[in-house]
Image 1 (cartoon, one colour):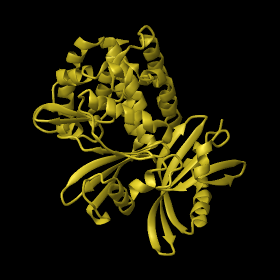
Image 2 (cartoon, rainbow, N blue to C red; image 1 turned 120 degrees about the vertical axis):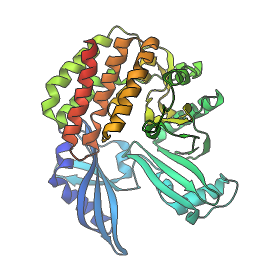
Image 3 (cartoon, rainbow, N blue to C red; image 1 turned 180 degrees about the vertical axis):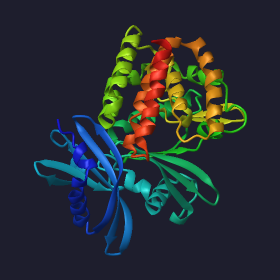
Image 4 (cartoon, rainbow, N blue to C red; image 1 turned 90 degrees about the horizontal axis):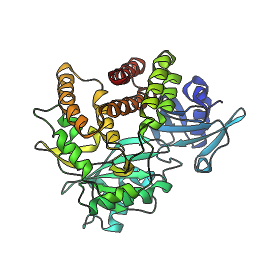
Length: 402
């Protein structure tokens, strides 16, 4: 089925972008593809960087377009609907994302200052000039994270912008972990339009600390932090492990880069068969445990971020996720690559003592395959070779136990 990927990644999308900008009162001067998110045979969402001439002057804008193989969904109506032949597509200009109603308030300092003052979040009034905003991550129609720095005195927060149907669940998870003493971020503010403002955790990101002298923390601390999660986490809704969708992710990678298809088909079949005998598990798990989610200080783990995904599962999934992310860090120099290899060489044997080594490697390979969709989605330079390298990493993990 036509999921719209050909239209949204090719030159034929230009008339849609031009019409959308003209409808908003501007003139598009040029554009380039920024990000692609494809669910093969179902839907595609893409964003584009465009230079637009408005009555008040030229400005760079981010445009979003969603196309579907079937009918549009309800929230598409929150965007502008335009027709391309027999297909209707939803088009918006950032920050008016049709699934993230709170994003406009999080994107502009004046609106955010008004919100903070109305809620007395900081215990003092602030002006827009005291606020500095940086977009940390934006997955169109899924979520966004904005870094907020308040000056005089300096305080740092992260604002999560979520879809309405997910908000109460994510808020409850943060509050649950905080009440149990797990070092998750403190919720400083939450709103009816699905903004969650989190106070910055102490320490620094492990993603940076791994390249500094010494160890960022120990393997035992990583396992201990996960094992310290309250039993109530196991009563939450189960989130399928990455390995359950390995064939889906393999299909996504193959659609973008067909020459890796045979290797990915073998790997996904081997992973699925190798994990078939393992039960789902009922340990409290993080669900997306990797170096970007962890804060460290003085060789200790001091904080855990992005707890949206916590729920029942297997400890091997969390540890495999960390191995997969460390195994696929891009653009390292030789010294950095050597440091990561050394950490993995010392940490993985410790993980092997806590979980089944075969399970650990197969689950890590599945996560690597899911990560291999990223270079194409983000339209990274030389994404083809980066993807091939990640596929080779997944194959190496499978071959260790196959």
